[in-house]
Image 1 (tube, rainbow, N blue to C red):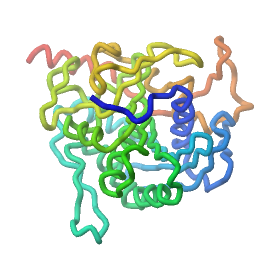
Image 2: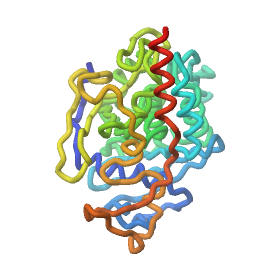
Image 3: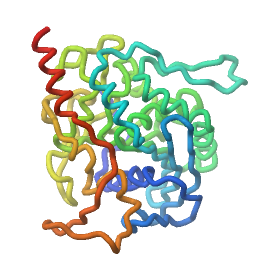
Image 4: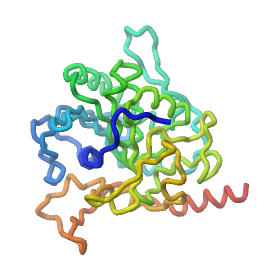
Amino acid sequence: MFEATYAFSDSIARRMALLSAAAYVEGYAPSSELNFPNSACNVPRVELIGSFDAPYDSAYAYMFLDHDDKMIVTSFEGTADFQDVETDLMSIEIYDTECRLPVPQNNGSTTFSLGYIHTGICEYYLSLVSVGLPEAIADTAGAYPKYDVMMTGHSLGGATATLAAAHVVLQYGIEKSRLILYSFGAPRPGDSGFTELVEESVGSPYRVVHSFDVVPHLAPCCLGWFTCSTDQMCPYHAAIEVWYDNLMEEGDGFTVCENSTEDKSCNKGLDLSVYDHNHYYEIGFGSYCNIQTSNESLNSNGSKDVPDASPTLNIFKLVKNFLMTKNED
C-alpha cells in the first residue's frame, strides 16, 4: 500500500493535464511565458525551460518551471504512433523483457534495470534518455532545491512519466519526497516488481482515470480482464488510482481508490471508451493546445468543442476478441 507524501490535488491535476496536452504540440522554444495557440494551455506563472526531441516514434517531452506550485514539471507526449503500442498491449500476455537503461560512466556499471516493462514503453523512454532528459531533470532539481519534481503525461506519455519518476530517484539520487507523478489514462507499464520499485522511489504517485477509459485496462491482467496477478512479468499498475466517474467538469468529485494500484471495486471493470481516454478535464488530448482559441466553437453544454488528434483504434473489437478467447480457455 502506497503512503503518499502529498494528498492528491484536483487543482494541480487540472494544471498538469494542460501541460500534458501541451506536450502534443512540438517545437516551442524556452520562454518565460507560455504562448501556445490555445490560450487555455498557457498556464499562468509557468515557464518553459527545455524541450527534448528523440528519434524513437517521435518521442517528445517538455520541461517547465511551475512557480505557483513550486515544481519542476516534465511533460511527456503521448505519441501519435501509439496505435501500434496499443494494439500490442491488447495482444500481449506477459512483459518478459527487462528495461535496461544506460548509466553514467563514472558509476562503474553499464546498465541499470527498471525490471520487467512493456518493450514499447521502455524503448520510448530510452529514446528520451539518449538525448539527456534524466540528466537535465537531475541538474534542474539541483538548481531548484526547494521545488518538487513532477512527472506527467497522457496515455503512453503517462506510462513513460512513471518510468522516469522511478529512474531519476534510483539512479540520480533525487529525494523520494520530492517526486510526484500525475498520469492520465496510462496503460500498465510493468509488473508488480516495478510497482514495488515505484513505491520505494516516488513520494506521491497518482494515475488519474476518466470513467470508462479503456487504456488503463491494457495490457490485460494475466488472470483475465478483471483479476490481476502479482506474479513476475504479469502486467500491473504502479501508482495510486484516482477515478472520476463523471464528466470531469470543474467541481466534479473523484475517488482516491483504497486498494491503491489495482482496485477493481473502484472503477468500472469492463471499460470500453476511447472517447473517455482522449478527454480529461474537458481537454481533448492531441490538438487541443494547437487550436486557436478564437476559432473554437461552443457545443450545447457551453464548453469548447475542440477536435482531438489523439490516435484511436477499433479497441472494442480487440477487447471482444480478447474476452472471447479467455472464455474459451
